[in-house]
Length: 396
Image 1 (tube, rainbow, N blue to C red):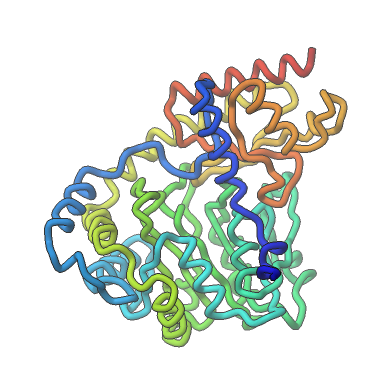
Image 2: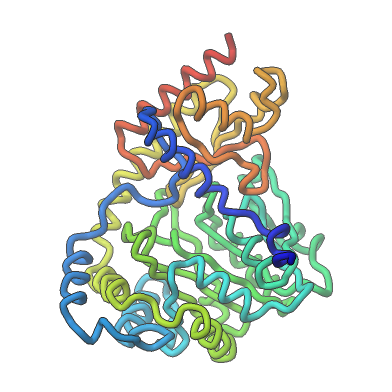
C-alpha cells in the first residue's frame, strides 16, 4: 500500500540535516565546528531551571492541563506582549504550543484550504513552505536580491498576488539573513496586506535580538483586533530555551477556536514543567537576553570583518537574529573542484575542513550559506580561520 503523497511533497529540515552531519562527524572524533545551529550557545537561565525543579515536585503538574496553556503563563505572555511588542492581547487569544513550529503548522491548518496560495519571501526559514504544504496550501515564492538585502516591497507582492492568495508569511528579523525591515518598510507591506484582505503570519521569535536600529513593529499594532493577523512567538531564542519547546500563537477568536481543536487532537497541553519554566523566563525580564546580545553583537562584528577580508566573499547586511548570510557565488560556478552550488561548497567545507554551514538551497537561494554566530568566541575564530584557509586553497 502507498503512503501519503506528502512523502513526495515535503522535505526534512535542512538545518537539522547539517547539524546531524556535524554531530556524526564529531562522534567519529573529527574536530567539527558547527555554524548551522539556530539556537543560542548559552544555558537556560538558572531561575528557569529552578522553576522547572519546583514544578516537578508539585503533583498537580503530573496531570493534564488546559489545551491552550496554563492560565498563569498565558497571562504572563499577554503582559510581556504589551510591554515588549506594544499591543494588547486577551489571554484567551493565546495558544501555548510545543515550540514555534507547532504554532506555525497549527496556524496553517486553521486558515488554509486546499489550493490556497501563501506568499513566502525568499530566503525563507525551511519550515515555512513545508508547513503550508502539510496544511494543503501552495507556497508562492518571491525572489529578492542581495542588492536589496533580500527585502521585498509592495510592487513585488502585487506581481505574485492572485485570487487564490490567502496569506503572507513574514519574519523580521529574518532567519536566515538577519535582515531587519524598518518601520516604514514594514508598515507599507502591512497596509497592502490589510487593503487586500489577506492574512499575515508574523514570526516574531527574534524581536529582542536587534543590534542596530529598532526592531520591526508587529502588524498587530495596526490590526488591533487581529482580523487578518497571526503572531508566532516563544521563549526559544531570546531566553536560550530551544529544548524546552514552548512557543505560542496569538490570533482572533475564530482562529483560536479552531487552533485549540487542532492542538487538542494533536498533542493536548504542552509539558507543565516547560510551561512553568517559560513563565519564569518571562517574569524575570530581559537581563539575560541583554547579556546574550552583548556577546552576539561582538561575535557578529568580528564575523563580518573576517568574512569581508576573505577573497570573493561578502555578507548580506543583517542586523538582527544571530545569522549572517554569506555570498559564496564566486565559488559555485564549476570552476573550482566541480563545485556547482552552495550545497556543493558547504559539503566540501565540512568534509575537508570540518566546518558546517547551511547551504542557501535550503532557504530557497543558491550561491549563499547561512552562518550562525551563536557559538563560542573561540570556535567562531577558529572556524572562520579554517574558512579563510579553505578559500585560499581553492584560489591556489
